[in-house]
Length: 346
Image (cartoon, rainbow, N blue to C red):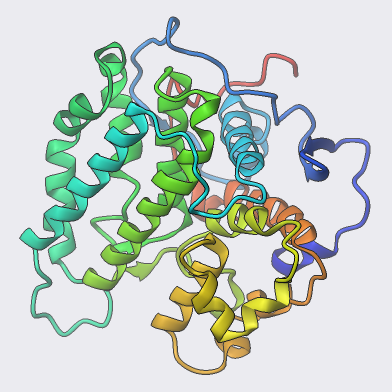
């Protein structure tokens, strides 16, 4: 897959074209993407999330489940909400959004309590386990402060996704599967009524941007190993979603094209306003050597003519390289919020 998804031909009759603004995004399988997330605030039943994906056969089932539909729908809805909008866009910041931002600040402040240990390993400073243990031990308490009382019954289930958002304590690594957990936590809060569609812009431009900076700080502080990295042939060692939403932000830009990521002055000028450019800036901060050598896929994608096409390709690549990859989603857990159950209309 990888770069090949950008070169795919016209969709077959089994794909679904979802209109987002003035452009089309190709998604599959049919019926996976809905117009909105379901509202679960009045029907939620506490559930213990369980592992359901072990082999490729399970992936084939997963693509036809409510969980897959809800995750992909949320990605697409958030993508549409930030099209042509920079990070500084004056979006609505609700009380719930602000409480989540405050929660991330609290998690960030705890890093100072666990400085890196003086071990000689290249990857995986064991002090990360101490920080993560504090997050896991205090997850219920901090969510009781962050979320309204009407959602407290769902805290045990939501806790699985929140504590899985920053890396694995055993392997001391971080990758797109952990990023997926944070997406699921946000989506769970949204389905339980914590967020409305009016909050979608801020979920990306405020909450997710802050989450990314915290994730990067954790990566640098504890030298977390890339989880499931394809090496130089992967899109990014750690992240994926900011490339989707960051390319959506750039659609229709009057001057900057995908090839603009090759200009370091442009990168520095745009990093604070755009997630895609911030990812490129971060790569330059942590890697050495020519960009086309350590990041050949991003280099190749810069040759795509429009941000619209980059965005379309990134969505298809996310499905292929994250949601349909056993090594990534085998660690994802399924409960009431994201059930491993067939879609009702299939």
